[in-house]
Length: 156
Image 1 (tube, rainbow, N blue to C red):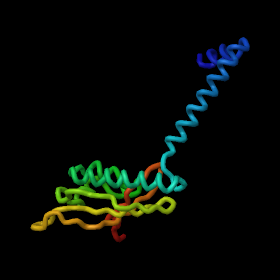
Image 2: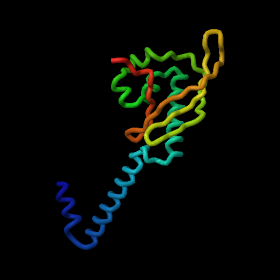
Image 3: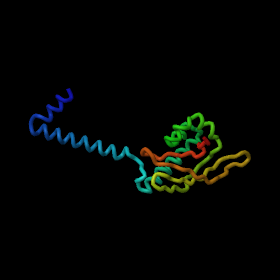
Image 4: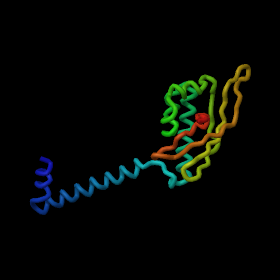
């Protein structure tokens, strides 16, 4: 049936052939545009684009931890980290409820790896509002920036 419809438009009359060709070109343009936007972030992306994307994702990950939403924070882990660490293990290794605020201070990217400098404010026992600098590693893969939790490494 599909071939019959294609044959109807492609085979008879100059006007129908032009409409068919125009529709094909339009469809190809849509597919090309979609591929360009779906590709997302890559090692070849401009430095400012990478910094902005990594900064936004680092902030969003910490916002989730501040809200005690470990499952959302887990979603920011790199695919390799998620493949080797279950949500339950991730949840068990992260203390939530301590963090009050976070501020992304700086992002430096080289190719597909970025280092994020953060200021994390938290409460610890009798000390309230302690602010500590923190470095995080992020990688760019599969069109997105992903957090690499270096605490996940375990000896073999």
